[in-house]
Amino acid sequence: MSEETLPDDPLAPNSFGGWCTRVIGVCRRSGHTLWRLHAINAVVAALYWAVIVTAIPNYAELRRTVNAGRAGFADIVTYLASSLGVEVALFVVGAFVWAGAVFVAIQDAAGRPATAAHGLRFATRRALPLMGWWLVAQLLITVGLVMLLIPGLYLTVLFYASLLAVVVVERQGIGRSIELSSGRFWPTSGRLLIAGLGYSLVHLVADSIGDWPLPGSAGVALGELSRAGLMVPVNVMLTGVAVVTYAELRRHDDGCTTSALAARMGVGIRHR
Image (tube, rainbow, N blue to C red; front, side):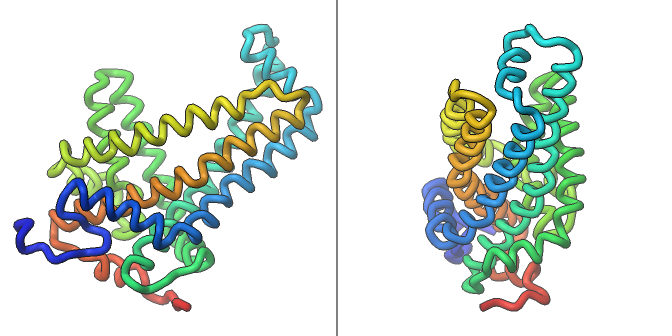
């Protein structure tokens, strides 16, 4: 389908400028609801670190010792176990949050306003397969990066461009993601590069805040909470990037519209 025959669509753009405009449009249209959803990750992180610094009163000193390379085996195991715990918790919660966020962004764009509760309720049907496919994707990316680098970078673009929405909207996996993204690899790479640079910059600032030398374990918890909170608006923006990039790929693949995407996901969901 040529660009001239493509009608205007609230999510699927005709150009790079349209892509930027629609990502901003998602943030403006659904920002409040997406903020609530992504804030769940910050709350989970805060609760987790509150438990950690309560259970391990000397956690701040433990982290400094491990980072300095002066820790014993038992301290290293304790530190890695606590770090892995929060990563697992955020991975599981994040699957629900991101699936719900994609649902909200598409439904809102189609003129069918959805609440955070709608998104989370919908996510109960997508979170588990999303976790499974994302683990497979990360494994393939890691193998590609370690062995030859270029295949890993190639798969990174393909999966980050569409896997989230492919699982959430289409109930399919990495095969469909590769099929959908490979046809527009270079334009998609440019879009993701810009989004990735913005994400990396904010993530660097967030890491710096999280690593402030605040006194005691309470300072560790406060730093981690600040880090998680700063990433909330970034994740709102990344929701727009994911949804608009996917909609653009679908538009070039089969001419699918925002209304069609929303209808596919909206069965059985009552809107306000």
